[in-house]
Image 1 (tube, rainbow, N blue to C red):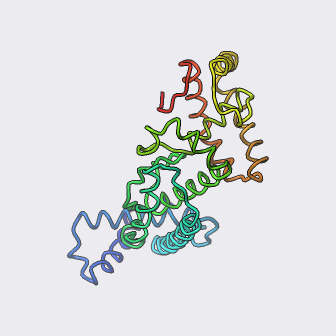
Image 2 (image 1 turned 135 degrees about the vertical axis):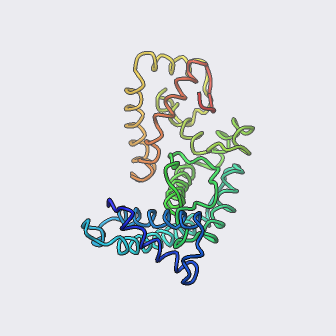
Image 3 (image 1 turned 135 degrees about the horizontal axis):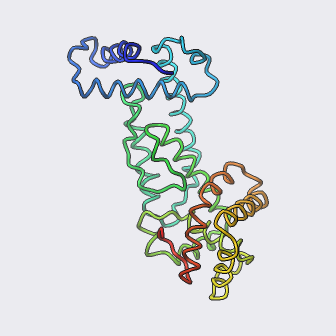
Length: 278
């Protein structure tokens, strides 16, 4: 909203007084800096919260916008916690220890220690499990809520296959994906993408030399952008057919297609699957 220091310092001072019970002079420089970050975080929350009449004009006092942002952050915490409990009863880690630890142990620690008032910018946990979406620019409840949305879509995608099918696909990469920070959704989606581009039914799980030659021919005849567009279209058709046209899932998977096609091209050139980034 373009607030200057003259607008923000009174808000920080009021928050500092609340933090120390009225004696703002006892606040350290480091703590004052943290509280300034908290104020900025909540103002940003208010700005991105949606149709919020409080932030409709630049003349709105910073204190008012800050308080609206705190309310938005609290609502987001409730929504994220509800989403966590929606996923939890049927959550499956698919043998991935990193996913298991992050979801079962890490996320509850976040909700236990998250301070929406004095340190909403703190994500608290490291989120070692790599979702198929770049969350590096997010912090606090924004990051956790978005991460949970990613987990929801990954669970939805993987549970659309027979459990033994997913197990067979992941078994090929067991040494890498069972205990390390790989993403099982990524592995299965890459397998689906291979079959789509090669024109093979998913029931034919094994990929032979002729298949890799066909994939190599595709990448020689079409540039990456063309392959990306074709795979995006085919993925959307796949989601429409097997997942009741779930738009959230379609957007989640197609957002990762550039990475998938780059890996498949490298794999085709190498004559086999590459699971690490080229």
